Every structure is written in structure tokens, then in C-alpha cells.
Amino acid sequence: MYEPYITLLKEHHLKATPQRLQIIHYLHTHHTHPNADDIYTALRHTSPSLSRTTVYNALETLKKENIIHSITISAGETRYDARIDTHHHFLCTTCNTISDIELVCPNIKRVEGGGYCIEEVHGYFKGICPQCAQKQERKHEPKDAA
Image 1: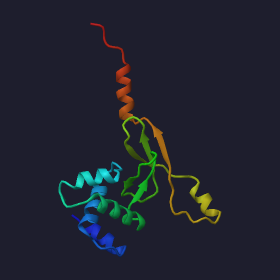
Image 2: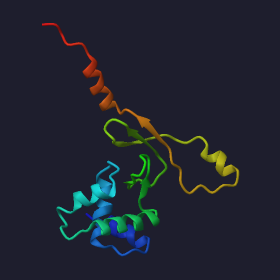
Image 3: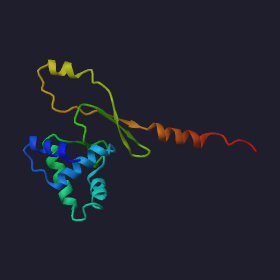
Image 4: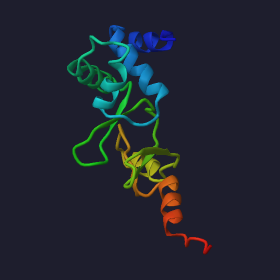
């Protein structure tokens, strides 16, 4: 189960600690863009000795090594993503979920053509997700007269 993550950590000259393996596995299997506390809360049930500090430190190390990305869309809240390819995000302002959006940025080649070396691209949208929009429509539908 953890073999691909052990290889990944070794490629980055990092020790494959149980905590790092659990965190990478969690992020690869939960595409919810969790924050550090969400990850800690989810993992502490199977690893009671896990501390918040360990989770924060592991996330910082993984981010620094470009194994994961951090996302800051909402003020003061950092969320984490195992996808490190270029993609955008959508934050629902109703339910606070973050979804991946598959868009190709048309300006990357132009910027690179100007001699810039792009290390990260961040793009996000804010609004109401389809599920919340559908719930809101149902609230405003007229009730059938009996």
C-alpha cells in the first residue's frame, strides 16, 4: 500500500517515516483539499501517538520537497493537495469545499517566452458549487398546492 510513497520519499532523499507515509497516503486518497487539522483528526484514530506538530512539520517538509502543494484561497487557511500538476481550484462559498478544475492556462507559454522560469501557477474561482446551487434552487421552488 505504501510502496509508491516510500519510493517517492526516497527519490527526494527523505526518510520514509510512518507519519509521512500516512499523510501522503491520506492526501492521495482524499481529494478534499484538507487543512492540517483535518488530516490530524482523520489520522489520530489509527495513530494515537500522532501529534499536531508532527503533522504540520511533515506537511511543511513534503511541501518544501514539492511532493505536495499548499493552497491558500480562504484568508488564513492553508489546505493541501497531492496533485502537483498545474491545475486550478474552485472554492464553494456556501459549503467551503475546494474542487479541482481542469483548465489549461493560455498564458504560460507567453510568460515562458519572455524568459521567465515558472515554478508555480495558482488559479482559483470562488462561487457556489453545483450541489449547493441545486439545494438553493430547491429551497426557492414553489410548493405544490394541495
